[in-house]
Length: 209
Image (tube, rainbow, N blue to C red; front, side):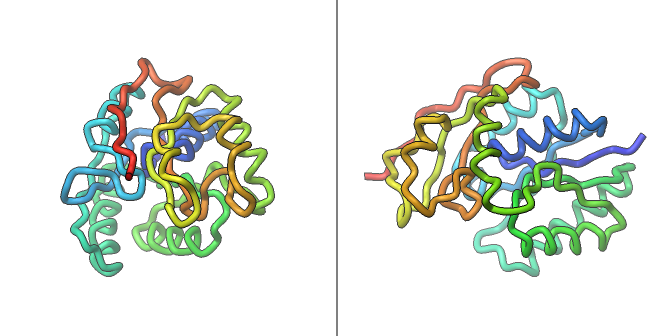
């Protein structure tokens, strides 16, 4: 049986990718997340222990890929490459990502994964950025409960940190902000999902002054 390794960031798009893959009959055998030296998840700014709890809630093993800081691209590719090599040796066939519509990132990931004779999957891929609002609404309506954990303070107020990712949040976004945050405007953490066996608590996040 073909196995899938899902790159798990702790946010809504990883969770949506999980739902889509399982609905399509794929067997997700493990999650993998990257960490900084301080034990937090890059961009999402949540502690590794919270992601460990998410994996427990799903019932899957969590592979951890520590990254140095700073992490030049060559080092990143070597570290990910070794992980992919191990995945191939352990019988994985697919590697999945929660990317939405940034074609340069998809191309980069595809080339990296295929180098190790694995097949990339992009289960929540959108054909155009214009589809992002409908996608964002499907996240909320599909039963995922997520909160905002980090924002680009040049585009959004840090006061949004800790707020739920819901219709009120979408309505509050200024023009030009992608509803799914695909340009890095904000990041999320999933606390509850239809496939979680229990809700995952996340301690209150510090809001920048």
